[in-house]
Image (cartoon, rainbow, N blue to C red; front, top):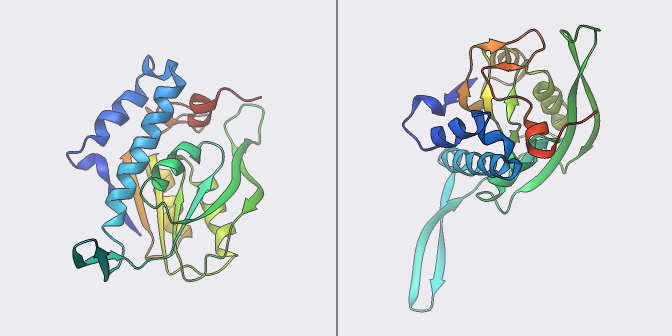
Length: 218
């Protein structure tokens, strides 16, 4: 698996990431969501450089010109609910993409909230067969929900290529993917943090992305 960590580059994505990490900035949900969208848009642009292109003749009012356009048939998949603004950012670039939505979320399996299991109960997706599958989810903590979404989507058909995108990952999440996804998969992150606390939250991270975007849940 190829891992691209954008925090190793000089990019203004780091500015947006610094803001969503800031606990004072997080008090405004609109600003928080907007930065998740912006990170998604910029990551999608970077990812677009790895697609295949072929020239297409475009007719203008004054003539014609050949412009290289993407050949890939993109399927953009999102893990609900935290993935929605991230998905929106990717749609700003891949506006002709097919779309898929997977409900894959973690549930604590012990009283101390230190062990988690993954529950998948809903998916809406076209066939992934032959498509460039891009799965977006802001947080890659244990990696369990991403693997669950990946396995569910592959049941619809074998994609030609797989990209996985997150805002923040952990070494544990990266290793989980290495063990469970195809070798030619590319993982995109804006940062890989040192690890998780006892409740499986990324540290330093920025907290629960779904709650920060949409409010706390029961």
